[in-house]
Length: 261
Image: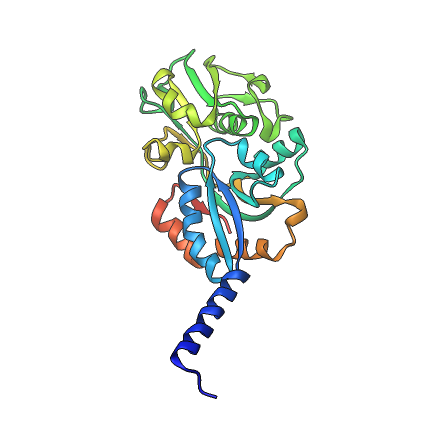
């Protein structure tokens, strides 16, 4: 039986509506900057697989896990594994990592000194006030020989775990997002790559110390534990870990952000 042009158009319209109705919609939280940019590249790939992603930006590191645990969003992509572990331990969240994303080697920046060796005794160094990222800066300084830490501290090292501080540095703990703004007021600051880029710093050229791109600080996609085996989670991870997204990361960030899959 032949379809008239009107009937054919109507049939195609219904097919389109049916496909749209089948698409699953999720909200994914990110922090501004590279995490948001990368997820924008993920969106069209996921859409072809039937997953409609709405990106929700939060400007700090605390809210995305609280929003996920509360069911306000379905996933987040902004944190490394040690930070997620600390949040779960401290707050009892039932949240699980489901896939690796990227690594942002953290850097120490200064408006006053060209080399970390030039920083004088008693200088003020700002670090993030959350345990895992603050500890990450301390571990970087220890790795480069400027401090010694209690080996029992591990990735949760804090100022209290410093056992040797030959140059008597004074550590100032500040919210991670505010560190670029505080940079002129201190001698140096350890700043996460996403906040450094947002402030116009070059995370490859500008740091006077930079973390080696290895270790436990790979970022993850996280979901509620009850959702981790749902089909949309697999689609989200596969879309993120696609060759197209890897190329986007390498071409866009030129070494300041590294794909980790």
